Length: 126
Image (cartoon, rainbow, N blue to C red):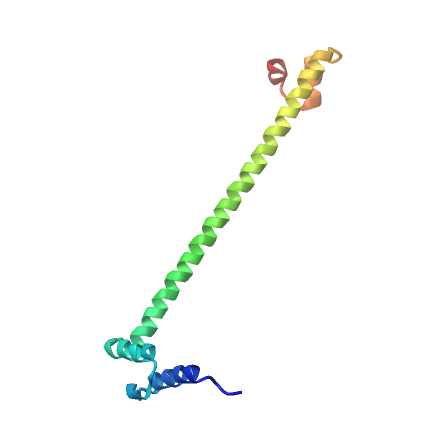
């Protein structure tokens, strides 16, 4: 399989920039020539690029950790809210049961308190 000429030029250009032997006149593509000009005016050393990449990676890792911690806090809060909602629903059901038992009049408030594990004062308040 033959590599198309435009692709071949880009591959050659990349190789030339890596080995530092660039002859811009060998290339027809204006984008490749523009790339060589940018590289020529950019005085950043490979060590500086490596340092920039390391700083970027450290910031990215720190951001990922922050996001993960935030998501963990949100999940814990959602779990707490669901548990609280369940507790409230269960409590409301218990209170309704106590009210129903009181309306039936078959049990004393003390018996209702003993059955439901509520205090006598709580039963009386309902």
